Length: 216
Image 1 (spheres, rainbow, N blue to C red):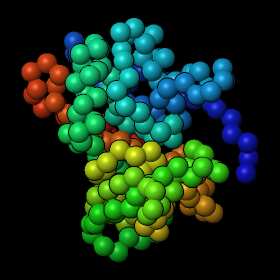
Image 2 (cartoon, rainbow, N blue to C red):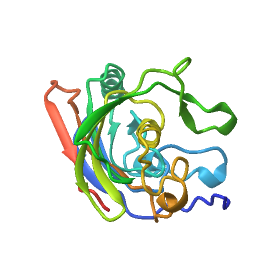
Image 3 (cartoon, rainbow, N blue to C red):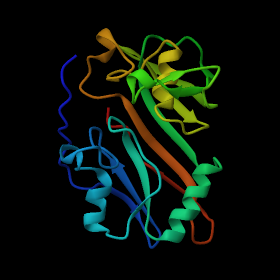
C-alpha cells in the first residue's frame, strides 16, 4: 500500500445556503472536515469556513473522501438545536454512491451493528456482539459500466456506516481506500456524495432542504 499524502483541493468555498443561523457548504472530496493529528493535517473545511465566518460552529462531519452537503451553525443556540436533531435522528440525509457489481434487487435495508476495528483503526467492522445498531436504506438508481448507482438513506450515523454496509452487502463503494480492493479501488476518488440534507431551522422550526448535484 502506498503511503498516504494529504493533498486537499484548493477550491474556493462552495456556499449552498447561508442565513443568520445556518451555513450549508458543498464539501469537496479529499478535504478533512476537521483537523487531523499533526500540522500536516491542519487544513480542513471548518478552518476554511471560520476564516470567512468566524462564528461558525461544527455540527457534524463528512469523511475526508466524501463530498457533498454539510451544515455549520452560526450561533451556540443553533449548534445545540441542530445537535439534538442529529442525535434524535430527526434529520434526513440522502447520499449517492457508485458501487462495484450489479445489484440485483431494487431496494432494501441493511441492518448490521458496527464497532471500531481496533487493530486497524480508523476502520470499522460489523460485530453482532459489541456493535452499535446501524441501519441503511438503499434504492437502485441504475446499472452502469462498473457496477450500480445507489441512493443511500442512513437511518443512523455511525462512523463509516455507508462504506462498511456496502462492503458487507458485497458491493463496496468504488474508489474507497479502506473497504474496496482490486479494480474496485482503482478510481480517482471515492464515489460517495452527500446529495441532500433536510432539517428543521433553529429559528422557528420550518423545514429546510439543501441539495447539490452529484459530481461524478
